[in-house]
Image (cartoon, rainbow, N blue to C red; front, side, top):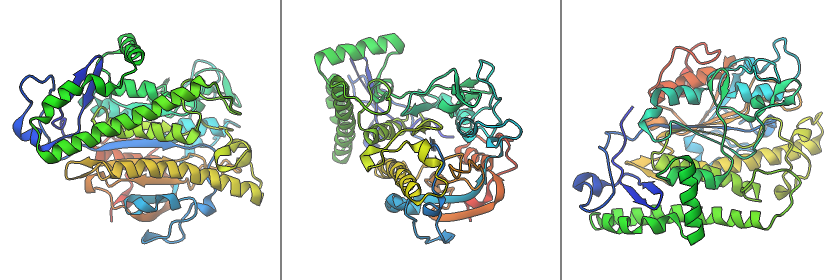
Length: 453
């Protein structure tokens, strides 16, 4: 993998904003008198990867394209992805065998989250002796995470629990996490967009970071206010086109910050919802999801990390979606018994989730990265480890792979793999393209040759 791109770092009161790469800075260097710092530009932009989990399965008749190969028609649920269809691969037929009971009885939802990125059978326990496997994102982070400030970023939109019994004798740790740094250590996720924002743009760890954030809040100032002088010095050395790009980048950071501030106002209003939400998060669930997607875009754009995961909701989530006129709980609906009314509501929830994915992918595509864009240089895996929520089955999983991995993936296709092909074969192929190949992941049997023609 390549080293850091040449990135100036603007600094202020507890603030450290790493900038995208600019041609004029690479050729002229860091301005005299600026606190900005930079490293050498690589020959090619780095690879990024992200994994997004959705619970309770998918209504497959509205998800699966009828044709295979290039030029397939997007079915109902996937229609929000039309603007990025050429960068999208629909993968049908993948299986997570270790999500099946295999003698352990009930607990399909907990297993589905635990197995999603590990391919390992979780130990059935509600105690502290949990055991799963190392997840694909953490395999990459442990091999290549030293190249960035954060080895990986773990996000979610429901707080979940780390202990107790959440599903038929399975610990809540299984239902609430998809990232595992070791077989016994789930990596906790961050659900508060402001906390993630502060992590990305802070120059201080832990308690000191929080203190400086509180100080900026008391002063009612943006993070940009504290790096403005540094930015002005930097702009004096930049070509006209790069000045415009810098303005666009900083405006984008400020726009996200303002949306976070509005979500803070929502919390101040103390509005009641019918489903618990994590503290200091937007009242509107769609906005919460989009802000978390924004955090991943900013993290990739500024090279704070190249590896991320996000749980749109925890395994077995029974959240309702009144914003799309679905008042029933998602988990309850997933036990549909082929009721057409329930199936239509499930399809609407599935399409809502996919629309947020579409927002994420379009932002990646609109973000320059060298001579291409972030989506071109990324691999974004989206899906569920349960196929049909009523059957709780783990074969023919609904999986999408977006991005071209710098030209190493032939996108824009619907690919049908052989039945019972391990999902972990996809992970093997992603790790190869990421520059961190391994001998196996979970129950993999090899690589997935179908990613390229």
